[in-house]
Amino acid sequence: SLYKKNFSAAFKLATQEIKEARDNGKAGKRGFGIKEICKRIYASHLYREEDKKLKPSTLAAVVNKGIVRMSPPKAGRPAVIPNKLTKGLATHANMMQISGGDGEESGRKMMALVKAMSDGTAREDKFSPEYAWSRAQTQHPEIFVRAKAKDHED
Image (cartoon, rainbow, N blue to C red; front, side, top):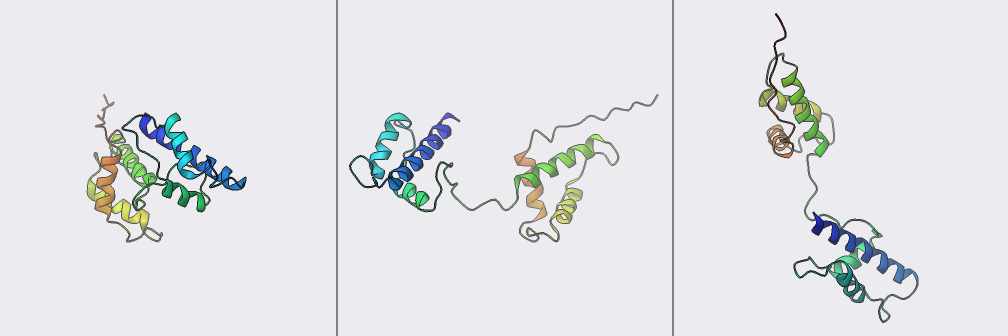
């Protein structure tokens, strides 16, 4: 969305300006403090009343970690199930359905597949196969379209 793009662009610009001010020895001087930089960016990027504002403490912490000109860090803990796994699972289920054979793939078979895919990896026993299957269905509904099998035999 436009809102997220504006905030992300403002965040990247703010971290860049703070880093440059620190590198040039101007940090903390009039017009080069974090609050002043935030005010300038509000005027150019986040000028609407409903726009989320930058927090000077967050910007300072991010620049101290060396994260500059990057998107703001996401809140919350990272996802246990990678998006690639759920997309692969959804694609596999769709392909099995299209190819015929056993027909529509059941959840039980897909959960067994998830268990087999995670065995012997760092993700083993970190999530339940049922959760992975339901997550695949909710994250990738466009892949789970009903495929109509055609019988080409005469």
